[in-house]
Image (cartoon, rainbow, N blue to C red):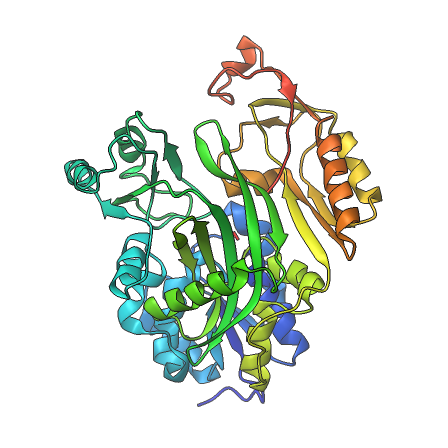
Length: 447
């Protein structure tokens, strides 16, 4: 017997990070929202973005899909969408049972989550990609490196089912790739997935972009294209520095979007929001990864300021109204996100210097999560970055925006990371000697 509700609800699996924005958007459209959490407890990294009060019901997945389907079926949900990366596979499984008309290709489900299977699907579709192997056997990697003639080249080692650059390590030419390979293999990563295999790939050189899309019936629409600024921070690569919205008139955009759409077809993505990271190399675009969910870190709201729309809001309109979705986007305002980075480990001082960012003409939003006396370690991945904070700048005048970017850098230069004493190092916080220096809390995406 159907629940006596005139509005069929939307179901969001793991409505964390930007996925938490689905609930207020659907609610504003008059649609109730049910949350499904795939974790017994919400991970600490997501705790601030999960608001149970936004949902008419919150269901916890205990591993029994049939029981969960039985609980959801009476509501006749209009859609089941993943809010975060951890919810991608469960959302696919529920959609197949509850909304078969809006399902992504079931046979390619693994390719939408696992980076090893993802690369194989892209290759099978005849698309160029970054050369890589995914295995638990270091001897197999050794043979592959010899066959691919990658000896003496920079490499990347990373887990196939992680996220937010967790465990991503650049191995400079001449260094032993087995060290990060063995260190990560068999470890449960921060997304609670076992690293039962590892990806080893060539290090691609170029400019990294992200293409944010919304798809329906296999028709892909582009909500925005952004360019990443990333830096190496010691042995860590892909530490976020900046994220800039790119005009649709930029000559790189049609190249990137055509490739991204072909990748979505290759992994069987037909419905929902996706986030495709692409390296534009001298040889052309190469896939970094597909994320079959909205761009994280609050990106949809920032995107609405920059373009007037977002992939998440397109999804809400289509699943509530069935309205026509534009194929591309327009850039109404220049916009950039600067992410804070700790270049070394130590104790933070003079955080108050960053208060000046709010007085800048282009200041749109900022979140500085540091206070004097905090002890930080050198930034390793995106989660570290977001725990430090970020500054969002937006203005119609590109010159004003660039002036304010420089001003943020100057203010960041006034923040200090003090050297740890030997006594404090004994407390276990700092794993390596820290050098006294100003914190180059310069920023960066993933998302």
